[in-house]
Length: 355
Image (cartoon, rainbow, N blue to C red; front, side, top):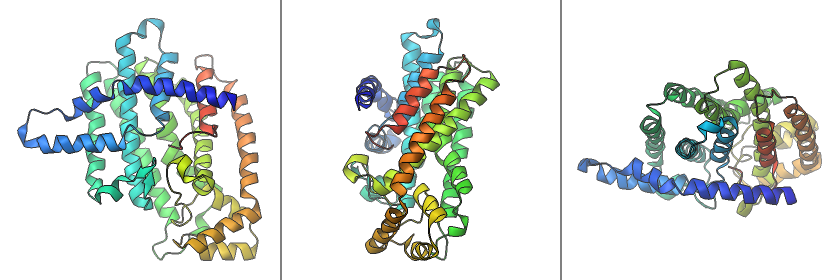
């Protein structure tokens, strides 16, 4: 608990420093001398302010922290740190792109303790997703075009964006049967691991660190591979926790309503439950999972309780946390072990928002 409180305080200080340049970011993205687009710029301001700066900012903070640990002393100028924070806001805008999209697909009504964007304005939110995506590339071009890392940064965003949308597609295809029947024959742990890697781990954990590495001038492929390996593992633990909270977390704490059960998602609790369920329990799960009916949702959760999903999760989290701690200590001396320890601690922290 004490360590959690220290992390909260430390993260809040980082958020404050990030927020100091947010007004400049919005101004850069919405100032346009073309009178024909003034209405667009005003709308873009609303879209950005509502969807971008209100989350947990894990990805943006981790990027700045990584840069400060990876960069040489002569690189740590005030200007470079500001550029790292601008790059961090690009990550937050990308996160907003995925959140608005995900909320539409999952029919989520609340996010970050406020109505989701599509609930607030309707399905024109789809165009706002594209609008926000253009902002990322506008910022990168404006602030990094003269840098040696410019092309690589653009390629990293493109590479991991592609992986993420492929992961989202796989998540939808595996979790949803067009005949409205649960795809339990596809709900394996291997399939779940693939969804998590592409949907979450790459952009949430690998991308911020690799952006920081490239901005710091680190281009060794072996270092990238070693970093990616541990970051994917931490990302997996983070998503398992996210899935667990979707079912067991309180809405006022996690900032959104859980929808995995009624949406028929291939999430960690259902995969674990199916591995351990009796024939009768599997029959009930098949009848009730993926149906937006409160009684059936309660019945699924009742089966989870009978199987002991909460206890299984607690054991999994502790064991995985210990294994990752051991793995971190064996990393190359060229990688900052304190960064991965911090990332692991914040990913497993019992406090704060999920996203």
